[in-house]
Length: 125
Image (cartoon, rainbow, N blue to C red; front, side):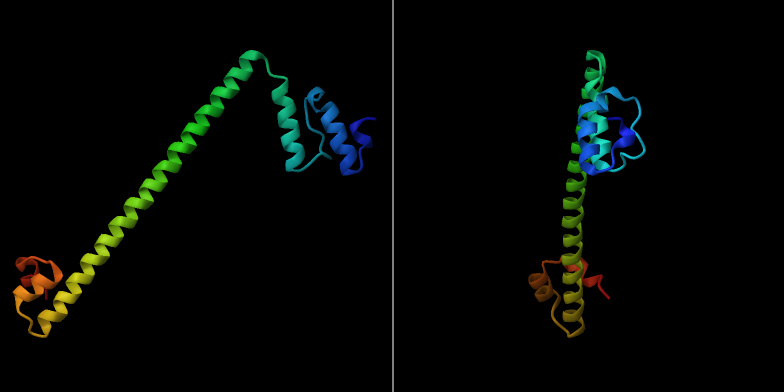
């Protein structure tokens, strides 16, 4: 049975498992992720020992890169979240201090409640 005779998924799957390692090119009728993966595995199974070492090294490099990127993203998100939270709290305290100042609160009381310095409170408008 040649690949041209394969009509059903079952025929294509059995043919691929038996003959993919012998083929240089994946036939057009074997489209889809399943067959892409099967033919990729078959291609790798034909590697020489040197090609296997190069392939494994490239995988390790890719995995290291992906792990580094994942760590950097997580760290960046955490730093951004903390920075945003701190800026939000600072703005909130400044807003509260401005409202207290507008209502005539004593600067020392505003400083005590908000934790802002006297210079910060005096600089608010």
